[in-house]
Length: 149
Image (cartoon, rainbow, N blue to C red):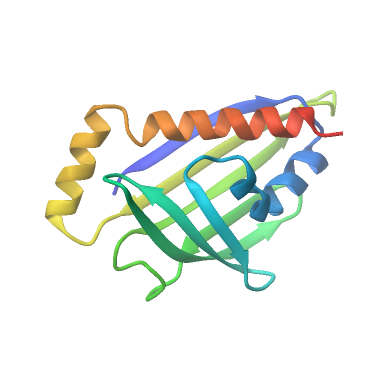
């Protein structure tokens, strides 16, 4: 199961960073691969995301656990696009001592249903995908949070 991990420092208080991340429907506004996000309930959302080879992946994600200003955990639901990709992750928020910045630790994992698909992704990973996109998306999120009033 491939795992992507990254820690970054965002120049904003933890309350602002958490609130931005919790309002994830806005990610479709600025993340290039996210085509749409429909919020279905307090804990579920349906995502349509661009994938390699001019394809898309659709899935329903569920927030499985969250503590405001501390962490969020999510996973894709069985039968909701997971025949293509099963994914999940967590993000932990650490307020810096001065309260004006937040350290964010993000862990994202995914699995593919077939060995052939996994070999394709392994080949793409050797070329820097999806890690490069992951880093670029986090940089966009950081920039968006820090620029928000």
